[in-house]
Image 1: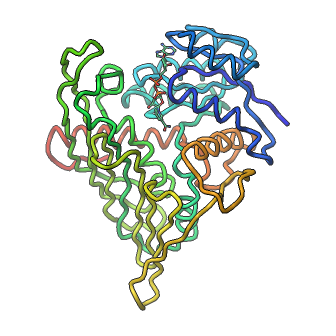
Image 2: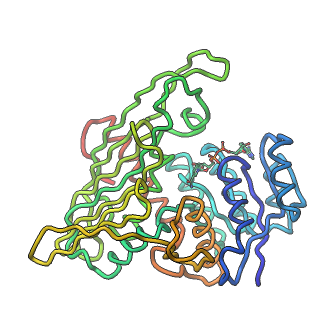
Image 3: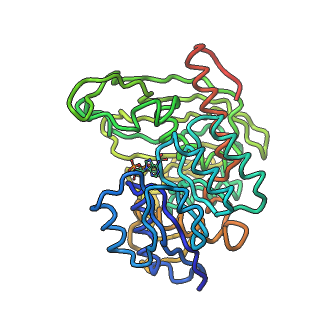
Length: 382
Ligand SMILES: NC(=O)c1ccc[n+]([C@@H]2O[C@H](COP(=O)([O-])OP(=O)(O)OC[C@H]3O[C@@H](n4cnc5c(N)ncnc54)[C@H](O)[C@@H]3O)[C@@H](O)[C@H]2O)c1
């Protein structure tokens, strides 16, 4: 089996999710390639965090607070970057310029200018394999919905609704952190955090927003800092984007509503997608992660069907087909998709690949237009 040696830059929440997926690689018995972690980097090297990595991954030979040392380590072939958004441009460009393969986290640049710079680095380094993370398309029910898109089963698209809702910021006493500060998280606010997850399937389907009218809300205008003192909190908490979208295959124009909320009462981590067409309709929400709701219009009853999904994964796993699928399974599948596409030159299926740099660029055009729409209180071309 081929081994790809990875460095991880950013050892927080997502760095650990990747490491855990690496530890569970034996779950995927048919993979011809596997990742190995050889270097780790974080600005603050707390012993507890470093011990977790080095204790679980004896393959780690480099521990550093300077990301340039990882990038110039000849043992490192590929890098996973999971750092705050203000660092994406500098770190991703340096990784690409050093000729390493990259899986970067969203939003792939704090703003459109940073995203342009990352895409320019990719263009000047011909042959680099660069992708952005997005795990929700790997839920089996979403795969079924995507199969229907590929087969043209929906007929003419009438309407699409997609969203990602959290209640993580509902508590006004939750201290501010980098994700709630414009300097580190960006002007996009929750669009930068949650938006790429919402856009990935629609963009891959070829449903392109032509214009947008946005409503952005900053619900909690201040939060306590780590010492308990109230400080301004200026990031957008909740966003609704009403887009006029065009189906690039059929030319049909339809409304597409995209929601990203960090203050959504009753929602813990709800990613959803609803597609309504003239021949069929389908719904999925992580609230009921096994359930795939589908409607085939046959001219008779208006009848929805609930299908229970199990482990119908893009990459075969050792888990029996009847058992349910979860967040960390989706992360593992996404990593399999990254390595598969890197090795084979194309994804295993149209919807079973990570976000492309071009798709991130489209998301930045949309989010920049959404900021302008909010400012001018009008519809803005994307
Ligand atoms: N795919 C997903 O579901 C998902 C979920 C959460 C976050 N994310 C994305 O992952 C990225 C990281 O988010 P997180 O939640 O892991 O954040 P985090 O705060 O948990 O971790 C960030 C890490 O970056 C490190 N860091 C900061 N400055 C650094 C520097 N100069 N050099 C090296 N390391 C540095 C920090 O020490 C920390 O270890 C963001 O882009 C975020 O949008 C993705």
